[in-house]
Length: 286
Image (cartoon, rainbow, N blue to C red; front, side, top):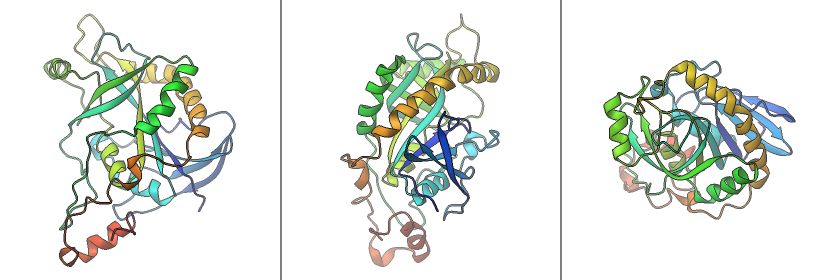
């Protein structure tokens, strides 16, 4: 199996970058089931990169049914240490215009039905999640976006909602009152699970609409989102192409040991079947 240290989660077309050479396509089961789709391993200007479509090819998995645990476990199994994720978002601020890019540094969890940890059934771990995203990756992304002339908003709080329906107007105004700047259905539990798996993770968001709070604008529709995503796709591909050569260096951030001291359950109390599952992610800790 071809390995890759960098993973990209997003739409199935994000890997359609000029100069990409497909090396392998990996289908697998994990201890948490099947990922959203097969993982495409590609050479992008000499950098092996693993691409995984979050919703599956053809966008057939709704946000609340994405098996994020399997997605993260599968990416780690092919050697991934750093993840760049892409997501469409609604804007909750006037200054974040449709087609702008956003790099959030905080997130508010409004999901309800999604498994959000690898640790369960008798094995307890409490993960520090004060900083949900990798600051080291942000230090790579911000100057590269500036270099390419992309409008990128930083130090923004995102809201991750359950979906698949969009917000009510009352909810949209509530999130604005909390100081949030964007809203999507993708960030969690993806970011939390990546942190547990000790992978660096950052999500690059692309604003497609003003959600439904801005009453002088057309309300968000699927057609609007798809149209604006298509417009943003080329910028996303160019940005990713510029980022990849700067990644896969030595990891100097806390992400690589995020779970090292978080497992609290006494060894003699740990369920053997759960230990077997978790060893696929944390062989050195269990």
